[in-house]
Length: 106
Image (spheres, rainbow, N blue to C red):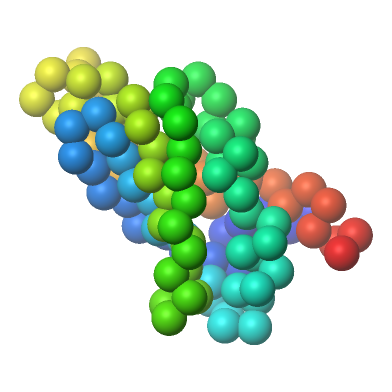
């Protein structure tokens, strides 16, 4: 089964309790299908309890990318969290492990 890392790479950022993850397609021709498949709801479901708030999705067509904003994901942010990764950088790696369920059926 394909995983997201087979089609894309990602970068993460943070501000307070909010993390953002930008997912970039390796190949421009994969972008339309990834855009149709990778929804905010799928990201929220895959992240489970790591993300307590809503997930917002912002396509960036000029970069063949999708930016996701994950609210209430960093347990207080860098200065208040006891988490091992208060910046949320590992969240981008975690998202890339997402199985592309149903992708081959398209």
